[in-house]
Length: 94
Image (cartoon, rainbow, N blue to C red):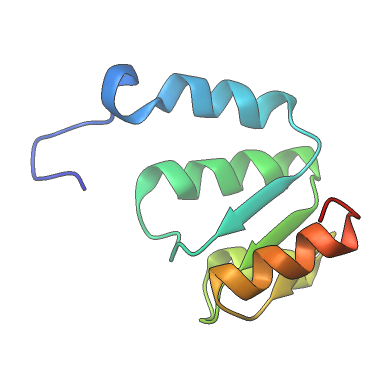
């Protein structure tokens, strides 16, 4: 959580690392966030600009779900536990 006048820093929030990862990723997997804070929102902007698939696991509607539905990607409308289990099974990891 960030308070007024605070900012994301690398030591605590890994902002630069997250931006770098999103800049080279093949897809964006999002689990259980509303996407209303700046770091997750920034990750979505990068993914959309790069045309990456977005997979959103969340029981509630949010900006990531909209991006996933618009494609490429998918919205797994469920809890994190059930959704990750489904995604891992689909990838034959579990």
